[in-house]
Image (cartoon, rainbow, N blue to C red; front, side, top):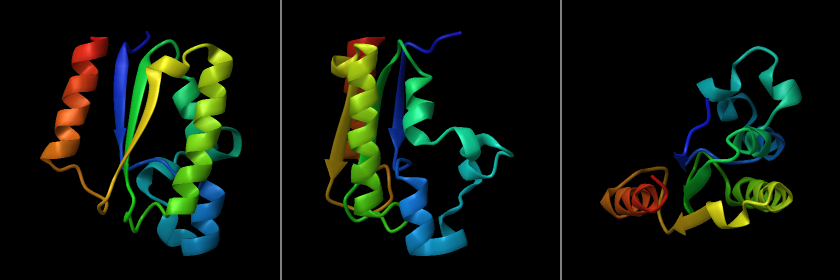
Length: 117
């Protein structure tokens, strides 16, 4: 079953960069699935959502997902999206704030869903 559209909020960063910076603190529950991270990181998880549209919203001040980890993942996701031929359906938005999902980001998500659902 394919999902027509999804939004990831404050949950996109390169695992290696996060572990080097924060060690075990970087391991949220999403990284604890046995064996998954040996084969699949955030760019691959987004790639699996093909052909669906994906919006990724991250805060520039996010203490859990450092800027360098976010940017590395963004570049890889956009490369994968281009190879899949869906560059126009994979978008990334940054806001100047911490790890949160406040009304302005919620409105961005709603607009995205209105466009793709």
